Image (tube, rainbow, N blue to C red; front, side):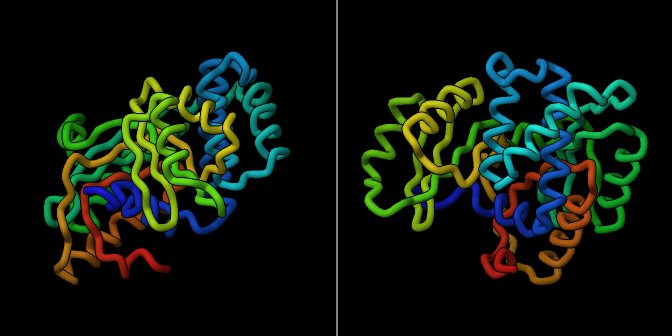
Length: 248
């Protein structure tokens, strides 16, 4: 699998659906609200908040917007309670799909997610029906820069505790165990590496190549409909979609 991106298919899908910058910032704001409520507004003692701040910066969220989101989460959440929920199901063709949600209305989002699956020829499953097909990992995507030697990148990442490094044409993908993600990210940040993204994610253990055009249309409609929901943070799947579908 050397040189093959485990992440690009999902990341491109996510990037396509989140093309509107404001939508990305709205979702990041909800993540900030969640971790501030759990661990407080001080990133020096709240490791999850540090991770989300790094993710926000990698998504080009301005520092003042990040700060406002933290202050809002710390002071104005008395009557708003977000909860994190994960849904699992099948897209057309039996493709495994996981939907991560942060919501203030469990009943509404459950109905919306179920409707999306039903409308597009999929089926919402029970907890655990497909998650065993995925691994939870940390994924840090580093931006290549002139003069940056790939051996130095690999050594720095592995020395920091990364479990794997993929050298690709346009980036370096650094995979970590979930428990090592923060330490690896902070070590690479301290070394001055530029992040294209840095977050906890789910990678499929194996992928299914989708080549049938009609099936591909149905799958994309479902993924787009899920991604367009304000409460949906991430959508993961184990499909290997044609490159042409990622180029919008």
